Image (cartoon, rainbow, N blue to C red; front, side):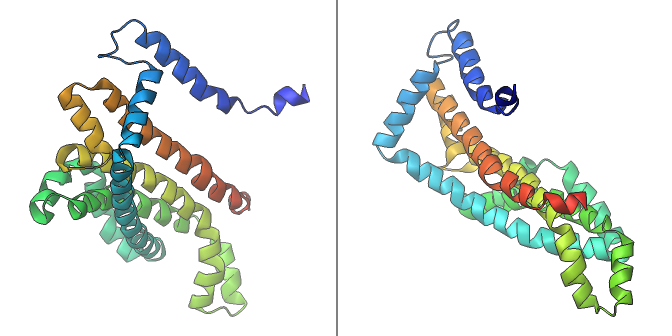
Length: 250
């Protein structure tokens, strides 16, 4: 019983998905819905000619640029809004406005301003990630108990010491939650922007595969998109969140 209770059933989800994919694909011709092994052969073809790494590297560089910029700005905005009522009142309507606009809607404008290529996609990623992250950080700082701040002030802590020893440690779980949310938003925006106006990248692979009727290429791009998101979730964000789980409890 103990052995079964410790078994992680999550490991069965991907094999189950592949099985369902194979069953459904068996009812369609391969050029419409290919089998998993057809997509695996397509992946080997892209790997052997060296083109897959170029597209993957382009997407990761764009994601890194836009997401890193969003992290810096969102921490500044979220911290300022969480600590200052006046700034929070000022920024809240802007957060609501930009959150209501789909990030991909900005892609045509960024391409007009920055042209096709790296910076136009980076700006779409930045817009997609910065506001959800800023709101999450803001709400996390607002949730910090006032008693802790008052106790620190009673002990003679300066404003800088309160920020360093109270606000920063207590807000770390919310910062990691913001990173998790921001990455998912940024990754979706990256793919959508590449499908609209890029000459390389995973999103371009999906878009081009659809245009030429190569279903295996389309599904290969989709698999890569999902795999990278899954790896980030399992190997990065869950571990960071688990590390700061005690802060939530306390």
